Length: 118
Image (cartoon, rainbow, N blue to C red; front, side, top):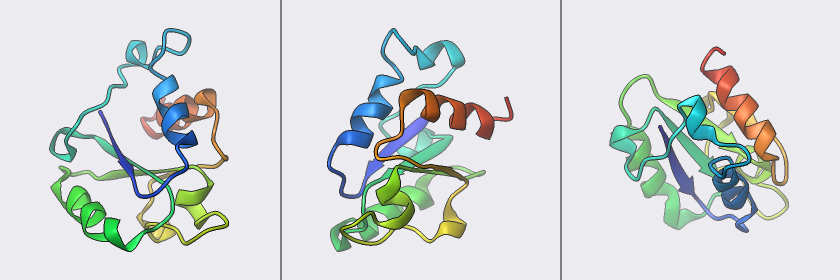
């Protein structure tokens, strides 16, 4: 189960992540689902640049996740801050890094499958 956390994106990563659940990619057949709470999540997907207003939200979501905590950085902004800011987390906090602006649905699915050991 993936918990989406948008810390300040343009929306492109959100769209591409949502696309993996469309019939063309059908992430559900791979047992990949989303959840609306970090308490039920296997992984938190962080998208966007760092904004001060999201610092506590990001911290609380991370702390609410059960162990083991898998953190996925989705897109260039989450990885480096893009051209506008800085990364929401330090690189050592990320379990999986998915590069791209935005990354393609195939890239996202492949990275999640690899993180699951498939």
